[in-house]
Length: 113
Image (cartoon, rainbow, N blue to C red; front, side):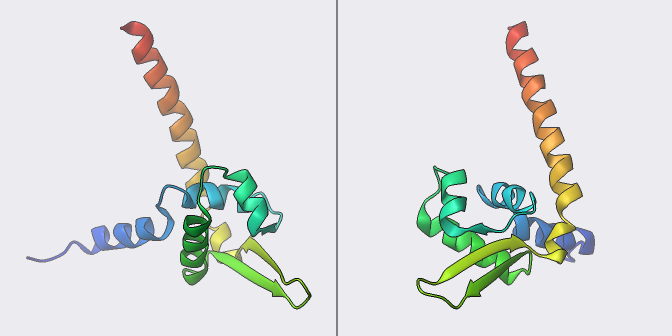
């Protein structure tokens, strides 16, 4: 059975940005200000430390997120969106708009019941 090359590209793209928390992490980092780990934890109160670490590592491996370690005591680490990661901004904005429209559609559907 032959694989559809377009489907493979879609799967690669989705694997890079999909996860319960990745789009939200990216949303916060796309605001432009570098954030420290604990700042991200405060912005995502329901995420576990382990899951945040895992998602940040995956996004860093994909070169979507940049991690900068400042040589000081105690060590300071900041996360920011990479130039490459900024190319996801229109994609995430469209998903955000679709999500808002979907919520409204569901509300209208529930009101009709």
